[in-house]
Length: 179
Image (cartoon, rainbow, N blue to C red; front, side, top):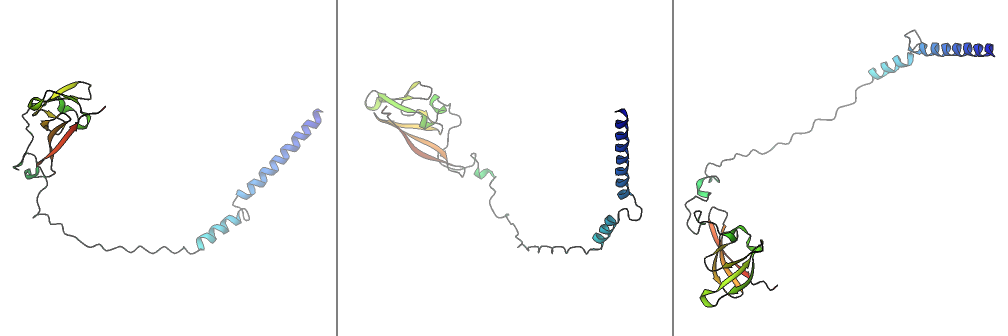
């Protein structure tokens, strides 16, 4: 059995050497070694190059001259809040009251106290505290000043910016909450 194994090993080595010799023949540069590769490379070099796409036509744009010398400057002092416009303005020196920290739509009128000209409204804020409100009290975040109080509603006037540096008075009201 030892002899058969050695014979088999020798035969396997001869087959491997023959296979490697066959592989080496294709790599060498001997005549007939790689004629197909050289022939293919020569054919590719001899082919004419494909035509290029034509260049795109550049679009001609109309020129426009921007001349803003005669127009107003949107950043000048004439359009700021410190500008010299007439009309109502918020009092920047006035101390803010407690109900001015809440948006007007978050305040609810829950009742009223008194009668006639001494009528006082009861307003519940989002912090679940009830406040007494009468004419002249400020509430809401737009400098809303209470103008009148009735048993079922509070009338007030808010100051809102008009977009051009001035202020507009806007009427608003809060009705008695029926809940």
